[in-house]
Amino acid sequence: MNFTEILGLIRRNTNTQNTTTSSYPIADKTLDVNNALNQYFILANSAAGNWRPVDDTNQTDYPIVYGDVVSGQQDYSFTVDENGNQILDIYRVRMKDPNGVWFTLKQIDQSLITDSQLDITLTGTPREYYLNSNGIFLVQKPNYASTDGLEISVNRTSTYFTTSDTTKKAGLPWVFHEYLALRPSYFYCLQKGLPQAVDFRKRLYGEDGRSGMEGDIKKYYRDRNKDRQDVITSETVCSI
Image (cartoon, rainbow, N blue to C red; front, side, top):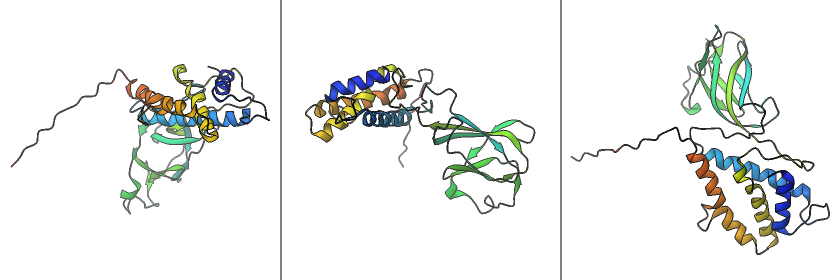
């Protein structure tokens, strides 16, 4: 379903037009479709387990950001990727040692950091990091430099629609493209007190508020890694 078709479905659901004089103009529809995109990826990543992050397939590269290791620099800020997409989460950090060999840094809880770890006079090859605000802080400053010596696996925002888009399709499984029309339709009809809001709510959230299309999205990502087998073990309780 391309963007023109998404807008057409919203028009049918809400009985509105796309003109600027409409009660639901194209600019508002586009904003709400992009908000639905945000919600979709929140749902997907919350259920994806070890196959994360769920990334927009319209992206032209993988969700990995590179940065230079600067001798004596402890903090490294990562707010956007190379294409200007906002970085939402950091999943893994790798770094090159002075010989150019990659290794994975261990993330530690900032609240458990000791005074000796916070000693900014210490330099060497960092082995740990912690997250703070929009960046990472290396425990121990590097005493060497390395071009593109930091590799950050991230979760990022999707590629959004603009009002001038026509044939562009959302970078998510086609079976869920209807979600991008259904969610805006529901909130518009809810705001306007239209009766079809009841049906749209059920289709989105189910009778129980936890199923419907949003439940299907979570289930899809929770179950998609067929090659991974989770093993349930029993626990023996001994009584004295």
